[in-house]
Length: 114
Image (cartoon, rainbow, N blue to C red; front, side, top):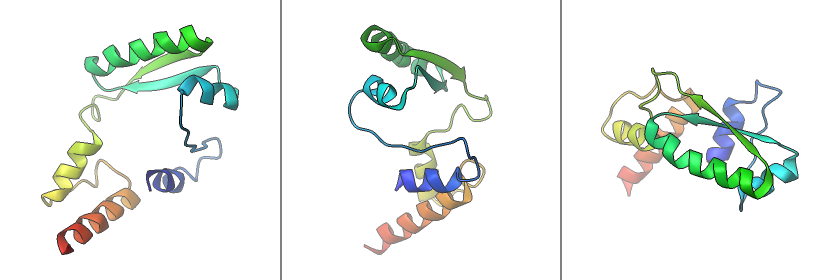
């Protein structure tokens, strides 16, 4: 479902492909011909984990990792937080695309009906 939503909200960008994989990221990168992975970081805690992953990835395959800090306006956003706010009737339209907001509302309605 997430893949479908991502494909829908990025369809206007011809240079974006939404793909799924199982296994090691470095194997996926090799299969795709990618030499660099770009990771967004929200907080220092993200960096601690992602740095370990980056070091392992370069050791396994030579795949480099570039870190991009998140815009401070969005650094607190996490899917679990958005779901919690929506669950209690809060407005999440500022934080997610319209399609995602609609799907989340549908899922919450279905859960309440059961």
